[in-house]
Length: 158
Length: 208
Image (cartoon, rainbow over all chains, first blue to last red; front, top):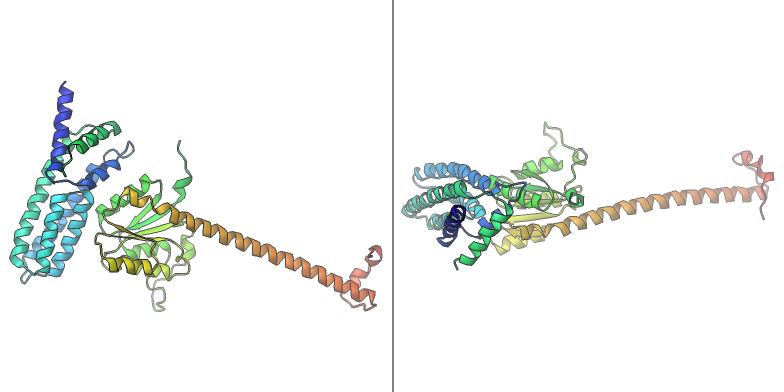
């Protein structure tokens, strides 16, 4: 019963990540690429995202310290950031990146600074949630993943 | 265990994003393709055996002959559009303008859905344009392009073979003709130095 209870909790944690918009369908695409030969692909690519995006965040912070703002450069960094976020299914992070790019287009300095705080917030929140998820999630066997996916489909938000 | 036939297709993937390189590599390997990933257009050209400054006579670097990479056959190039330095579009143009590489199918990937960009790439010879993030359903579209190239290559090889055979046949035919001419001149009593050696065995041949 313990194991079932555990499974239910994990399922529910995973479902909420989708329902609350932290993750989108791209994350499921990543899970589909996991198999017995590559059982940790999702965790690997997410880890890679976090190490690479840390670098981008530093670059953006530096650029935001230089006035007047170089909106072209900022837009370029954010394009990269948005691309990576999109590739791992990080929906909220990606959405904030889009907002930032809008501010760049409008040459809105205050807007850029404000939105970037939100980008970092979403970035950090997702990291915490995914770390927890990877720690407690069961072995990435095909059977378990199919169970998780079926449950997600049943509870999928619109 | 498993069919090895498909694993012979080799895809060169070009993307400056390390996350996207990892993703495209996994997508391609899942589809049983061999994969090489590089992070820039210039590295892609290097791998394919072309230098950017191919026409640069003053270059100190020896130009790389396309033949050097012949054993590393590339069946398809899939490249990101937006890259610093050489864009995917620039890479596409260089490949299509190269006599040794122009038949390799090229696929462009982009995170931005810009119709004019898509059209430009297709007009320049790109075989597909994928919106990022790329999915397995996109990668499933690649094999027909690679098969078409293989069939084309096989056709060329067969044509070369046929033409060699034809040349050989023509050679034999012309030799027989020239022998025939010599016979004729023999019969007419026109003995030249060339066919003197043939005269020795001539009486032993019968012609009707």
